[in-house]
Length: 412
Image (cartoon, rainbow, N blue to C red):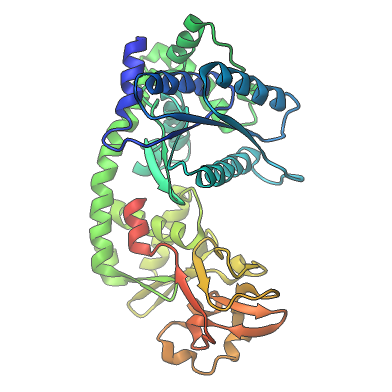
């Protein structure tokens, strides 16, 4: 791809929404350094001013110097730059996922603090192709095989991946032609990571005529098909699903009549809305959940409980998933609930629980199920229940879902 084509692809990603200022996430790797160059070129030609941010995850001793390298390069471009540090203790579980979550959280806070509404990242056609391969390994449906979204909104920030149609090699060619240095993250060669395995397999597919561009095009084609299915799913949810007290309720008979892909997507979106999970569960797990609906069995998945009661299919937060989950009253609880009321020092938000529900004699008059109420947010002072807004004991407090199920369904 020529430099002109790279620039055109980059700029086209921002139409029709042009930001007043553009934030650029720069790690020091070749993809993000090229992204920074393209953004700075655009700014110099009358495009939006650029500000850059680097996250030092404190996972490698070289990371701090890499952040300083980015800062020095930004200075030569006249681009303001800030380094954010992820201060953490020991990390359990998926290291890459934990680092990714921390990176987005830190950058979101930075962007909101300085009034940035759009942030660009340097994901490429290679990343998109690797996503397709990893989706195949998970037996993913149309969502998993559609790759990464070119843009999405979260917490008031519009995230944009303007280089999904540009290969990693062509971006490095751009940097080489300009004499711009970049760093290679050693974890990109670590076979312990699934993405690295996918990257190496991708190279072996070339003799079959399967290229990065081909797989990226497959993802783009499937993304168009996904949009059609997403619209059909939203329409189906409008007919057969409702939100009640934080749980999702499906009409079972009508759910069983849905096209398989629509039913699968409806279940997955409900699970993600309830749990806050970033990724859909594996295909075989979702099939087991669909079987539970057919067979009228209770089941659990992703920290959620499915129960079939008569013709109602109820998906609710699983009690053990919120047991011990505590936050200040002015924070979002369980990724979904916002509490408003007389905030005071010493008050916290925890799940109401069975014991708390026993202190709410009027809970049946709310119309919400017991399963929904015991996992609903309540205000506590130590072990004293101050308020249970959904269970008929408001005491001046209101609990609201930040984004309702139907709006969440449309945006995902």
